[in-house]
Length: 270
Image (cartoon, rainbow, N blue to C red):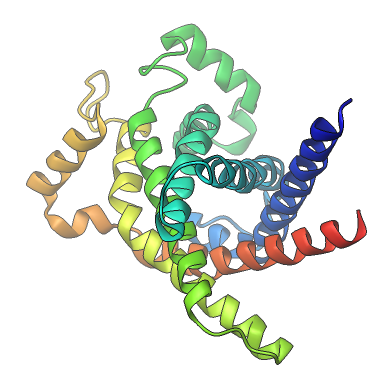
């Protein structure tokens, strides 16, 4: 292995481990809010599946952000724009990776039968593929909305955080510095949630059960948004905003802080 390849491998390992750690800590701290939102019993009931799904997802988020940022260093973009574009690229990549898992998850959640009658995740995925294939009516249903949801979120999330962090003066006091970063991270997650939630609503409508069985009412992202707006009003595009902000505001701050501190520790010790 060449020195360059070894250097990239170490860098990638640092980014993936730090991103995975950020996801793991964020899930452990914020999972109870998901439990409240989905009305399950027991604050940590069902925490293992989110850990197994979200930890690699967050690793992908941060790793791809760093790689896109590095690639954009060769393009004549301002530093401020680089963060936003790298975030957009990260979100689009993340969406392609996670969308099939989201389709299976939403399909399982839509099953109102007793928990003992629910198929396993793999059985449900196999069922979706056998019935509708791998395309936009099957395992990749709602891909356009997922691309919008993750692309917009990461663009605002990373763009706001790193740009504002570079503007707000660094504090020499460790506690104040921690609070500075947490506050900016909280604002990043909150603003990103407010901006991207219409895509989230569209994704839920497309991937979830259709109003009339056998008829597909919600097909594409922007057409679904237009239908929801026309039939239910503007506020319908912001359904679920409060629990989402409660989850992704502080959760977004936790992820960024854990990622930064974990990255620094890995660089100093490995």
